[in-house]
Image (cartoon, rainbow over all chains, first blue to last red; front, top):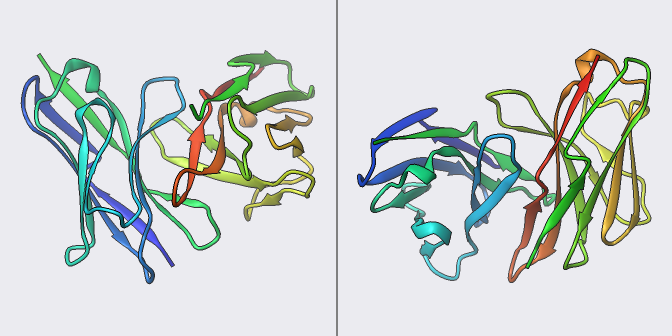
Length: 112
Length: 117
């Protein structure tokens, strides 16, 4: 069975600083992995996804994630945080039945 | 591309009434649609999986008679909360899945906030 663990329910960075949101997965088959962002009172927006085509995946809004099989990780990074990046971020793995299995989410706070 | 809409965006109703929420994929045909519920400060909880022309598959613990799902076409799914009670107040989010490319990818609607008085 697949699962996802997001390390750190709350991450705080200063504007302009590196953003690092951690995600570790468990899967018995090669995984399909996703990062979504949720702004307050809104649905989820797809940031990027890993489909085994490339280990470094670039997404929207300057985010990228690197798939590391040896570490079973898919951490999300952005070189320079903007105030507009403050939101809830969810890592997810696609399960065998097509359902998404979500992590618990990480709240990103960006301080001026 | 890959836009999903939900209507209404918020609704207030009296206890005992029924509420219908629509989910539409605007620029693609969805292979599958999903309905989620989200409580404050929590992750999404999958309620059911819906395929066009088929009965929805409900997750364990979700009352199928309470949460009626109809998937009338490849672009429209509806969730009806029947005889709503205050404990049904929540944020409901739908998603539509499409092969995009290489993997089925879920695109989410903006959500519907339901408040039952």
